[in-house]
Image (cartoon, rainbow, N blue to C red; front, side, top):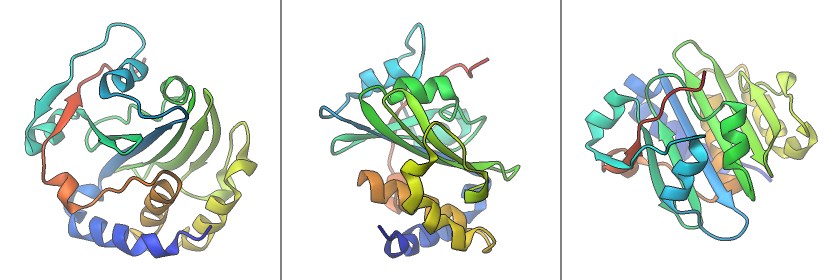
Length: 196
């Protein structure tokens, strides 16, 4: 499957918000096998222990707090984090989120630490550090052959080519989309303790 037709949207989004999106974003889509997963159920999967409450934060406040912002998008649940240490890419968190679900995650940080991850059935099937197919690892890297083929040609391209392609992969595999309007409205959020 080609993802090229989706990259123009994400290149535009990243360039329009380049001031802070160039410094970091973590975007996760959880697509359950058996219908939608409620926001409360998603939060329960995010944490292992006492569940923090869902709160409503205004846009700027949410980004400053480093909260995980959530939204239902059809059958999928989106989790977006724009500040702080990436919480969702921890393997135990991905394991919980992907029970009876497919999870796609893309993230990068100001340190240029970036990755695309696909998890399903409680396992990380493939992880692509640096958004570079040469570094792919996981339980079943062959599960994302088409995605690796799409990332390969943009590995050396200037920012935001790799990030836009990885975001296109997330949309292409889950049907969810991040756009300008998403960043301009408030969302339910949860603030969780970082994994130790």
